[in-house]
Length: 86
Image 1: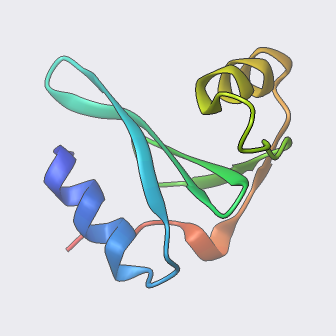
Image 2: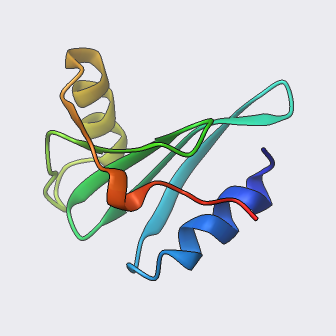
């Protein structure tokens, strides 16, 4: 999928999700990271959603929080935030 496909599908959820980072591999989206408030979210290349097990404070770097969570694999599956591509 392309970046525009992910942006459109995330906006269609109408949850006020802010996209923080989109990682691309070989021209296709590999992972998308975002947040709602202080809850970190991640989508894989197929659009399956996960919330990451650690919230971050505004004093902490979002990137630092993401790296810590991903290193320890603290994430939970969230089917209600799965993306539907048109």
